[in-house]
Picture 1: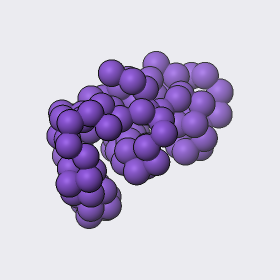
Picture 2 (picture 1 turned 90 degrees about the vertical axis):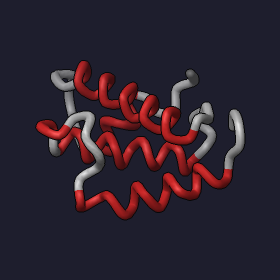
Picture 3 (picture 1 turned 60 degrees about the vertical axis):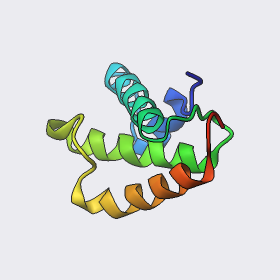
Picture 4 (picture 1 turned 90 degrees about the horizontal axis):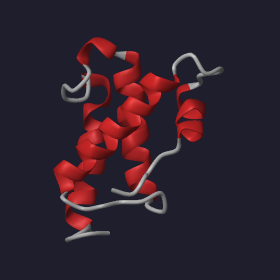
Length: 96
């Protein structure tokens, strides 16, 4: 699977300085990209801005609500995630 996010851009999105959280952030990146791939059955890369935004929103939600890792997005981002996911599911057939 091709990478959608880099650790650097994800840390900027999360407003994280330093390297203390790098392992967690890298795990969140991998989980968000896998989540998107499993939901859409399409391989996205860093060129797809909507896929990138989806993964960033998911990473932020999971980072801020760590007790819910692996669960559905929280209520505060559910609509955004569902809307982006619907567009990604309907816009791409097969690998993007």
